[in-house]
Length: 276
Length: 278
Image 1 (cartoon, rainbow over the protein chains, first blue to last red):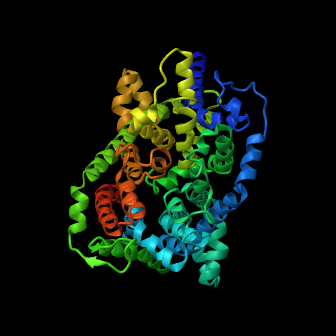
Image 2: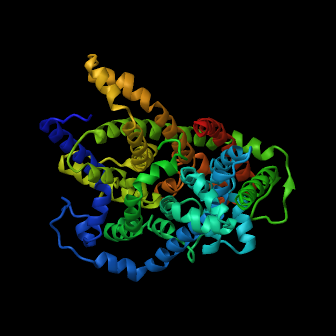
């Protein structure tokens, strides 16, 4: 039984909690606000918090001088493309691991996980050279391939932990009714696992959206997603705070919202089921 | 059914890994194509005796350990706080986890320019208002500044996982101990922290894997400098191979990075493997 918490204590924890929460969130809030200032106001001293002339001039400037939409579209294609491709490969694999486990299943799962431990810099050079020779440098296809492979272990693991919770009897019943393997997976397993598949999709879109080692090293201009687009602000444009803020807000807002929706699944996905 | 996934991952692992290993024994510079030569352990010798290698190792360890200490202590405190009853707890939770979704290049640039810039940054302005000298973060404490930025990004991760673990704690056990006269400090030390031990281990191991490969934050803030003050192993290998075009030396560094990461990985795998049986 939970006990009633005294109102005074609840008041104190509320104040403390909101104080800490707002402090941690402040850089994001500040970036969001600065995006609506003029460049002069953005560096004005003392800084104004809310009482300034809200303007969209920084957003206009960013959209005029750079091709924000192109980079945004690159991010969308790369993160959804790699996640979609990953799911296509991972669903059958996770199905097999969860419902027809063999002696080696656990070893294979652990081995898949171990590929995730490979530091990317250890394979940067061969991938870079292979991509150069195959004409994949600075292409969205190249990044989709790399990010699919990078996140495949996480996708398989997450699906596996979700599939494991589905009673095998239902699948067997479908099989008894004469369902083929393909329809068993497509029409029985997948519909039941929709919540699990959806959260796997969300988490991996987030991870791919924010991935910043391969996207920085394998793209130049054409296929650069938002991570690389923002990196181009590192100097000297970074000193134009309003534009930097506007571009940053546009880069993080979509995924922040997705992230807030999928926060519950995050723990499970990122700890490979070790903490639920 | 498993085979496509296994085959792909196997290729992804073995082909580049084999090539890295192979390149690491070659004299191979991208500026001198066709001059590749077998050189045995030379690349390893030069990489390991280069003073910047030891700087990079020291920086890598400082970065990883510094961020771990901050995020674990901060994460435990935050998790304990967020576990309390308060008004609008779900919103506070959303505020706290938000930094995790900010892409590394954005958080690094925003912190570097809008907060830590010695002239117009918010910290400089605040210290100006208080009549203090502004502190030039990236000139005087570059590595600490990066540690601060990375900690901000990873604190939500630690908090979220520790909070999840905390919520699975048996409340009756806590109440029973309270009836037996255990004070809140004793309850924290002897019931809550032991319960969190597993989650803390998971946080340490998973964060270590990611922190060993920190790259974007360094690239957009300091480019590894001043000197080698913020060059970690990942950045050193990147600089060696893609800026100095020394593929052989860079590959040797890559192999060393893999060996180091594997030492951490072994512990992580054991933890998760044990859980799989449960």
